[in-house]
Image 1 (cartoon, one colour):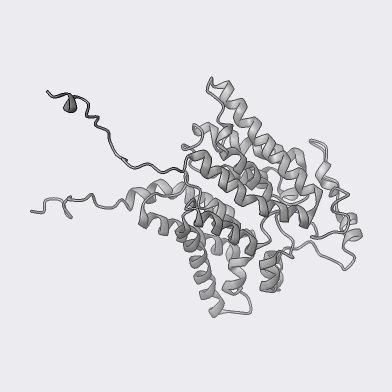
Image 2: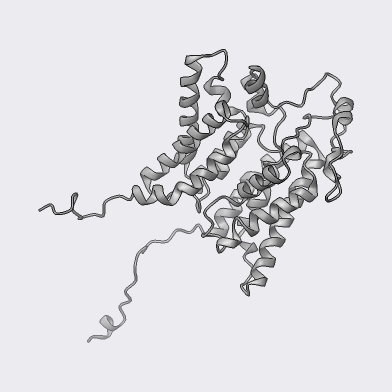
Length: 351
């Protein structure tokens, strides 16, 4: 055997590697989330700042502790858990008690991620797992909203923010009356539409001049941040497009049936947490399908379930449950949409 032949190294695919490492992609997702975080603090004040810090710090500490407990090196430096913390803070109400947020963060990372083996093994989005736990365990605080652009938002906490552990959250009714003398009812655009058939102007939904979860209000800003990731080729735009297209088409059908009761597609796409979910959570690389056809089916499933829950469910928002259900179906979708191997027979037994 010649010397040149002896030095040949055989390796399995892939033979071409991207320069984008896991930590590089995750760090850029954090960069994309920072404008959304900044706007949420501007809109709701220091309570949201404390909420974001609490969720992110708790998520980091939980993952670090679990890694050390299992005798593995800490994986907090891959930035993925930072994304979980920021997203969890952004999808909670602005006045959500900090101790409850910490519990939700522990559950989201500990059970939703590390229980399955950490990054790359979790079957559902950890931030949404934490939010679903908060919805079930702390129902009233998880569905209590506060006014936006309150005058004292940079000097005073929302009263419920600093509620002590296992104590009843401080009522915010008097605080709301003091910061919102125009008689704000505490309803989000989705609640107004579902229960009173009152629509909100599209401009307000796009710019974020509405109440809601801490980071879901400005749909236009979220979309711009998502375009940054698309331009960097760090997000699959097909998932986001499929979610929004299906949600708009499904709501459009019901709107044509009865426009007095059902919202129009523009309201559906830009209201609530649909944009935040479609851009930053449905596109999670770990819990979404990997096949070309599966990606479109996955996004369409999220959009369809979201609208059905909004229109006919007991809750006025359905994005969280739609994404979690689609996450659970993701392995099955990938399995049934595997492309045919090049050179394989189309039908078993064919000549």
